[in-house]
Image (cartoon, rainbow, N blue to C red):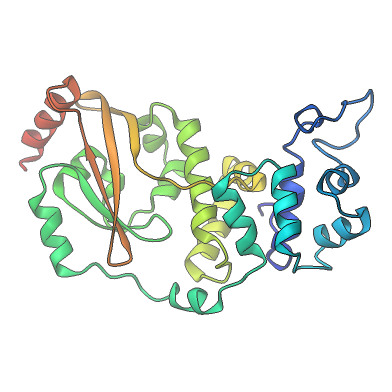
Length: 272
């Protein structure tokens, strides 16, 4: 299984993140011999201005309610960005009501299906755990892994065709796993997340490696390059729009670009 302890999520996160900070990044001479990767516990405590004993209690799960001041100090030492800081705060502020509602089935409203049919670009609807819930014909022509019932994270990590489809698979995989952890957030009991974590931990060594890093990132809009087996390389913009608690994802090319011409060819081949 992936290196993650459900009953001590705060300690697991602190341990993973300090292992990624090199001593010189924190202003500490590396020294001739270091038996642990990254920072030692006593070094994190010293830099955060807390006792080593107290930090040890945090990492071992004996104290799960540090003050906001202590969290800020730890975030500074571990060099967390804004998204990672929110995640760290969420680990000590469970949201049971949100956890309960997130386990309900995800349904796509009829008007969202109509919208998918109307837009002239590849578009699909994804759920909280990257499950594809609905898609238009052009999205499926772009990638068969965008058919409803598929899971984008599972495809990325376990499907060789999806790995070949992504021009920079390593970066895509790291980004998706980090975004998956951000989505899971403080909802460790959500059945869908538990199922996927268990499956991917068993089936994918790359998932186990990335999940153990505890990276957290928001997977937002941007650009991506894919290698389509019929029309070749496509440089596409990606937008994610929240709709009814779901995400509408749109892929489109720059107007007048070679990728736009290839996307139009793909649309004609797909009969859309």
